[in-house]
Length: 147
Image (tube, rainbow, N blue to C red; front, side, top):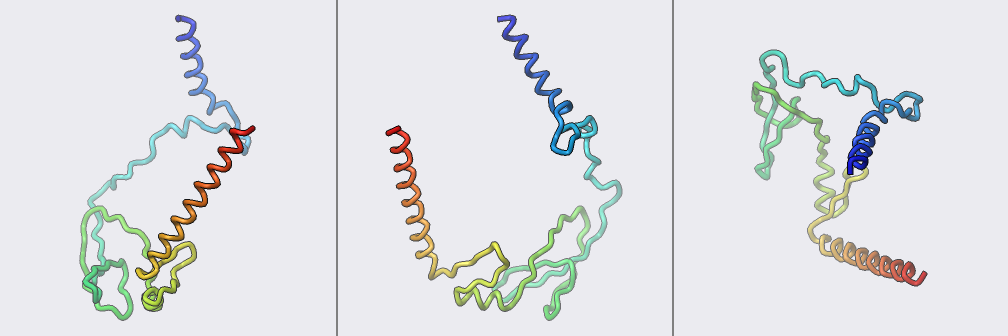
């Protein structure tokens, strides 16, 4: 039993040291001691900055916020203090709204939209695809058993 424990300890130590010795595709070790140093603090050093955002409510009652004034929209300026996390929003277009209503999507590549009346058709298609994949898996499993 003693040799087994020693072997496990040796393997654990080897696993810890290996990234510092094994060279990556660039010819440098996969890890260095600098990789173990903690990152700089993400907490701001001083008092939080005040941030001005603009808010408005659309015809459906949904609130929208932006860091810049949006042309053609009457927005209220709101001053926020504290640590504010923001992310870039996708530019909205009036044509996107009208095309979504007609069932044709003009969203950016990689995104799609389906009108509610087409949802049943999409679910049926997905169910058919799942059934086809299940049948193919059964066929492959059977072929593997026959070998």
